[in-house]
Structures are given as structure tokens and as C-alpha cells.
Length: 144
Image (cartoon, rainbow, N blue to C red; front, side):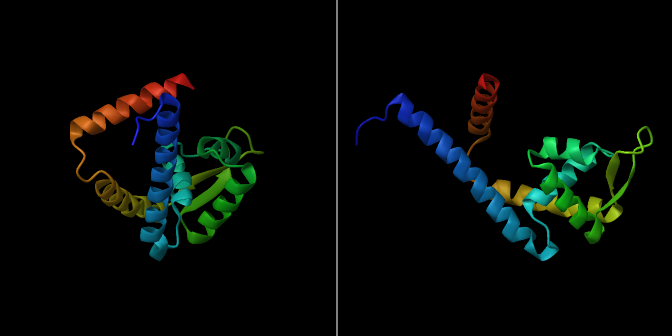
């Protein structure tokens, strides 16, 4: 088998990254099914944990989803008891969201699953190799 060209290697790396992310998300979704939460929902809850009181529109931007999708996920999160919604103290027209203790508990549980899935993913990869991968990805992200 011949050596791949740089273009072919770039494409191969991009495909592998996408497949890895999809596989991780699928693994997470399977492991979280009993809690009736998806990895996408967790991303939204994590953003609320980091930015409590964030508006739905800003939350959508932070999660790279449409405002309509964010709204549907917020409604589901309220029904599940993971968040509460309220008015922004500075602008009553803005609706904000905050995690409840149940939402915090769910994120704590999910973080353990993330650690387990990451351990499965990176089994057999050394710390130095992980540093190299991270450095390459960080450098590449700066390019775009």
C-alpha cells in the first residue's frame, strides 16, 4: 500500500475526528438512556452550569444549535426538573434559566460516565501521545 498524500491524510484525519465524536456521543447516549437524557441535552445543562442565568438565544449560540432547538430542550429540561426559568433582573423581556439541584446531580452523574467513556476511548494511548494530539488539534483550531 502506497503512502497517502497530504490531502488524503488531511481528509483521513477529519473523517476520523468526526467518527470519534459521533462514536463518543452515541456511547454517551446509550449510557445515559436510563436517565432519559442525551449528550446534547447535557451540553445545554453544562452551559447553564457555567453561565447561570443565560438567555435562551445566547444558550443556543453557545451550544451551536438553533434557538428553536434550544427552546425545545429548555422546555424538556423544565419538565424533567433539571432547570428553572425566570426573568432577567435587568431586562424583563429576557427569559433566563438556571440549574436545579436535580440538574446539578444529573451533571455529576454524567461526568462520571464521561470519564469512563473517555477512558475507553483513550485506552492504550500514553499521556505524551494525548498531549501531542491536543497540541495538534489546538494549533489546527487556531487556523480556522
